[in-house]
Amino acid sequence: MFHNKKQLLCSNNLSLETKKHLIKSSIWSVTLYGSETWCWRRMLKIKWTDRITNGEVFQRAKEERLLLKILKNRRHSWIGHTIRHNEFVVNIL
Image (cartoon, rainbow, N blue to C red; front, side, top):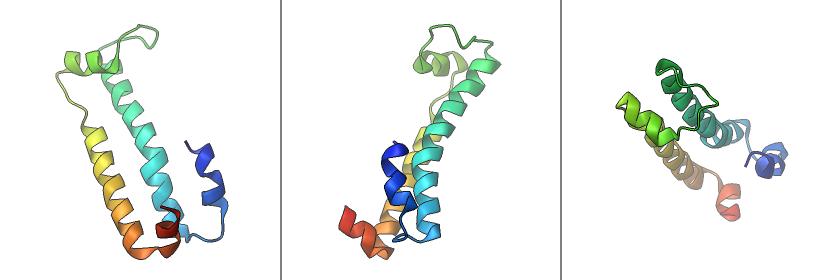
């Protein structure tokens, strides 16, 4: 996903702030989602080589995917902000 955005992120058409928002909404979301599961696996002493799905990990921890909901909200607010304030991105969409 990040590789597909390389040309957009390296262009001079977007401001630094817009590029940072794009990275935070696209790249950090994947990283944070993975780290949430890793934390529960570590707490439950589940080895990374064990074939246990993320859903099963959440069930064992009696938790739900909070970061995924937070990240979706961030992405939605970033898209709304970008559409309202950046004509270049509006043209892309």
